[in-house]
Image (tube, rainbow, N blue to C red):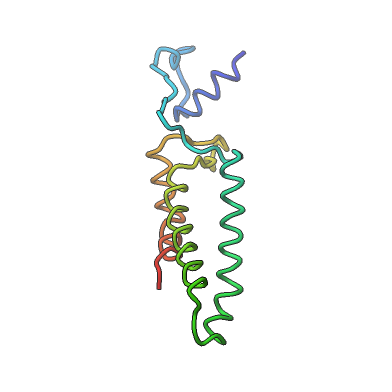
Length: 135
């Protein structure tokens, strides 16, 4: 019965001891409703997207060094493929801004876009920006 209340208390960020029983119930708690909710970590799109990134990163770390070292000219198809990969890395930035993440303290998924953006900018944004930047 009280598990749901405790989870709401954790999601709201209340960690101090409450002097009055159920004082936090008087606080207005509404789950944020978005027209486009954040992408679930274990959703079908994120699983597909992670596979696409696996292929893109695999190509980048295996084939690209070989091409840079041993191949003199690029074919048109190869050039378009690499432009497509740059586009995939750019789209990944937007997907990351729209994806839930697990709070390291509570291990609950965070679905507030502001918190998602702050976390992403503080963690992987710079690396993704470097990966996207076409050289």
